[in-house]
Amino acid sequence: MLSVSTLCLLLHGRAELPGAEPQSTFRRHPRCADWNSGAAHEEFHDGLRRLATTHRSELFLIANGGSPSQGGTDHRSVERVKVDFEKAKRELGVSAIDMFVLQYIQPYEVRSCTHAPAAARPAGSVLTQCVHRPGCQDPAVVHAALDVLVELKARGELRYIAMSTHDFDAVTPVIESEKLDAAMLRYNMAHKSAEREAFPACLAMGVPVLAFTTTRWNTLQSGHQRWDAPPPSTADCVSYALTHPAVTHVINGVRTIAELDQILGGMWAAPLDQTNASFATWDEYGKLVYSDQENLVQAADTFDAVGTVEEPVCKRAHILDHD
Image (cartoon, rainbow, N blue to C red):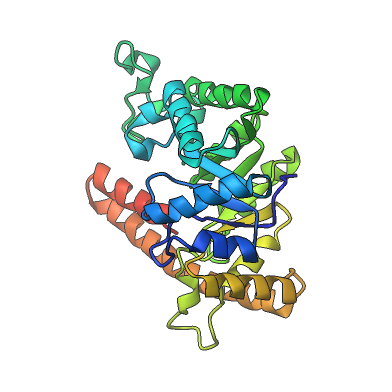
């Protein structure tokens, strides 16, 4: 079990939060902060640095890196992961990080590609030419990055190793490496495929899940045109995710102090479980929201039948990635 509160707050400089907010947030809910050096407000980072100096033992600091979105597959390399880790320590002014997350791991990175033979690889490259998934990668790259993090744990510079992904087919291969301490996975009342595709493996291997996008990028609270009742609050979304036994923690990027107070008040005053009437209400609401997504996917599949080979596949993947 991770040594951190059930609710993890992503304190990474939301536009609505000024520099004083890390201290204000900490007084209400001490423990967890996610460090992202590319986030918006430097004054916000200054506040977090001060907290790391004065309350380090009470903070759970999460750093992330090794993401292909940061500039290609080289950002998954051993050297890139080392650079990201050291940068987080240096900018926070700490000697150790509580958790490091390898971001957005894809299935084609952690298992051998079956789409193209090894002979199709360019000389000296770890990439496979794959018409279905451009950039299929040798799984040794990810496992080498994990080995670096294992070494950092052994040296006492890191406590936990985690992965994040939007594609749950990537979860089991990484868990089976037995190098992972936690999985950061998308889960909310409208996006529940993790229950089938990832949570069973996490439960079987004892890997806790940190659920993110529990509000579906703050859209679930906006209601639905075919839903007459009030929509869920942020606290409802957080509580819903925590009802699943695989989900031990929820990561929430609070936008304001008032929203944080609402979450804490809602969670602790009336904890949700799967026997509550409100759970059934939000389950039904999530299905309604997801039905719109299903219609979009069906439309993309129809376009697949009449369009070109590459473009419809990309469009459908884009839709699925944002459900």
